[in-house]
Image (cartoon, rainbow, N blue to C red; front, top):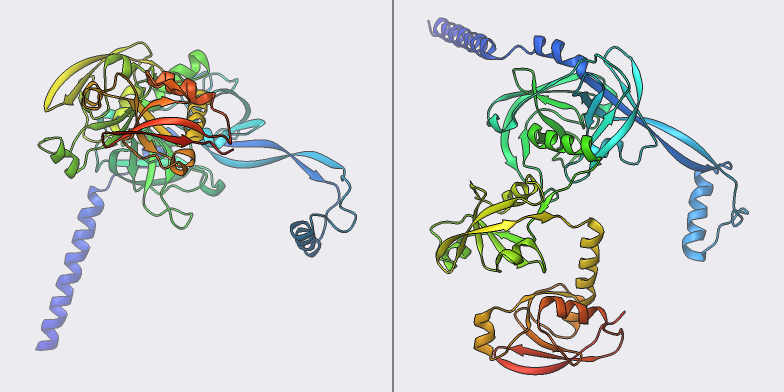
Length: 466
């Protein structure tokens, strides 16, 4: 009797599991029609790069021995000291995916897919192949716009990525490891993800399987519309681990419009360094909870400085959009046009106020790099002294050390919060004056610097070693 009951129980469990499987299968979406309709507009992208190589090839053992001699004795054996004739050759490799966004041949992909290419090839679903022209790239969003000479091409439909929600089904089509038109599906895990290396992209996170070769390919919703461009994965193994990131379609199309018009992207600039507000900071600023972007530095001659923003201000909202995390602010600023008058809701001294900021063009990378080089030469960043600090210390002007990077500032014993009032015999009236004097300081020779620390003035010898 007990055996019979066990058999009945197992039969019931089996039927229940089968029923559950059938119900779940009935609720799963069918992607076949979507794939059939969308695949013709998805392309494979390969590139050619010019490489140089020596005509003379050595065995692996000889190459290893050469490296040993070069490392320890600074020379190469086997007559390799003399320059060997070198020849140029083009190497072609399949690097990624893309998709067609216009009937006349505009193709969107990732910048890293075509970066450094001499020739770009675009192959369609029907095996037609074209040599593409590079219209423009934007490294900050990792996007590139290509153009092929063709007409009446199949295209994708772009979705409004702002409508996307976590939990929705999404599907990717691409060429992982060179396997063309591979289809993978999953759900949106999160939206608005900000990665440490990307300040201008609120990524779509999904669990859709993405691998090398998927880069630049489309991420579709169930309506067959492109909601994102597959760009990155998080991995510890080099392969897919369930976390992938896509550039939202709205961000991509904003970049596309500028690349079509100018071949490059110009972004608005606020000119502040910001940080997150944690629980302790929220308590110290008398906030009800942690939120907003805390201004830690205001760049000289920036839109923020001209509008009156100060270190210690907390930007609670920007152009009507509430800021929960500081990482949201760069994207909001970058989406606006240069010259826009933006409204910032700022928390200062326990009160909120609205400030109007005329956004300027973001400095070129070369200008930013030069500014960082100047800062690194001194090993510190400085900010204007506040009126309250000046009154308390009894000075008319000066700059306060905001951050010690290292280098000369660290070697000479300077500290965060020190106020510099004189440098090399000249009065520091502003950050601009300080920067101008700093550029003329001699190397490897001490100059006098007047510093006020904890209310006590003193002179120290300041020396830049180069």
